[in-house]
Image (cartoon, rainbow, N blue to C red):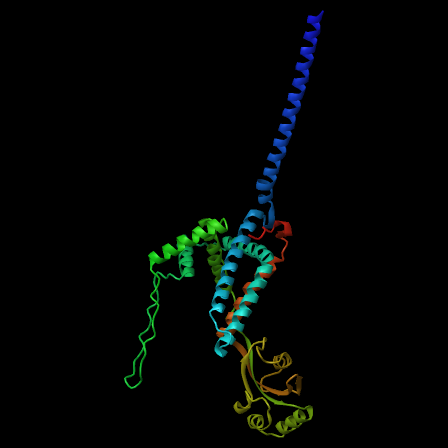
Length: 374
């Protein structure tokens, strides 16, 4: 009897131990599952989440975070260099005071860039992807050598440095040669590049391939800019006018009366115009496009509405009252400055339209910004 009781108690104890063991194992499994899930969520799912989608291409959160860290790194270095240069100046020296103000302005601008950096990086990555896709459509590619040259020149190494033209020396004039800085050698570049890559790896987690992609994007952007720039017309309708500028409307009406009476426009401009920049040239404003560039928009609008040799009624602007005469209108080659402006405008217009198009989806939130390094 006692023996059977012992057996029952032992079996009961064994069952309880098994239940406890199963419970402990279940809890351990659950904890492990939670840890694995947390790791998977934190280090696999979240990094792969899109920060943006551009034309169906996902820009990953970890790509964004890496670029934020890189941009912070470069901005911090820039700020440190500005502060170091400022510290070398003497605030009691009048000559240095202007430079101190200049450095203060640059430091303030850099701090502003640091504050807006999270959004700037997002938009920069979106632009890079838009440019990459458009370049692919146009068959534009960047070679490995082009990237290498871009990186080398960023560090100050030039494979084929330009040969300086000899300075003519006049015997009668004392000549003090300007000291020249020896160009960087390939060995110096390699040493500097290697040290910089090590810093990026340690402080940012940037690989050499990551660094190359930054410069590949720079070269690709320039090539696409050139392609779009080539499509901008080099000729445009322009008008050539001359003007007489006076302060009051009564004076302007008097000028028109004198012109109608047969007086010479050039002579009148020299006599009564208050525009010091043109009066001695008879009021000649030369050729210009519909942008005007420095010419009041009211004057531009009237000029493009008049016939050649026609004289306007008084045109009121903030400068006074203008009387203009159209000397010519024709399609002309654009001034190099204006052509450059047109090209910049065309590229920025294309990029702006693409950024705002439906192919760009943004998923940015402040929690995706990597924390500052302490």
